[in-house]
Image (cartoon, rainbow, N blue to C red; front, side):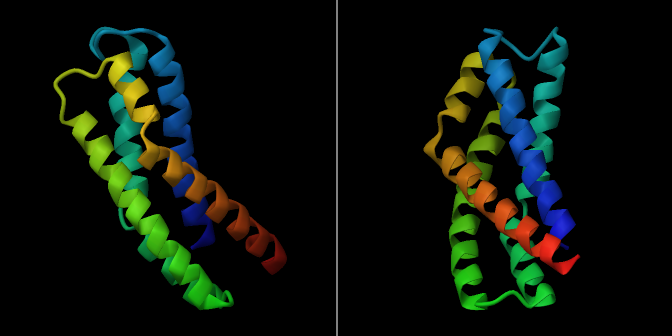
Length: 135
């Protein structure tokens, strides 16, 4: 379960890194370029990774017996809000007929996405620590 959460965190982080590069290209559309073809794939992977992420984290707390459980669960409520807000923004971008570099730059600047990334960095680091202790 911890590996799945780490993989989900990585998928979102990779999407963000790709979006930074995509935004810098100044493309008017996602049509006709290699990175343009990839931007939707990265966004769709992020959507998949974020869907039910907080619930998966809560299950991991139970399965791994992490304590104090109530502290983890309280933070996962924050993660859930940030993930839902970010999902709404990502899905709005995906619904557009074309995805320009400027649109992705605006998504990158979204406070929702930035909060989510900070949440994921925190979760990933804590869970890596617990995973290493279990080994």
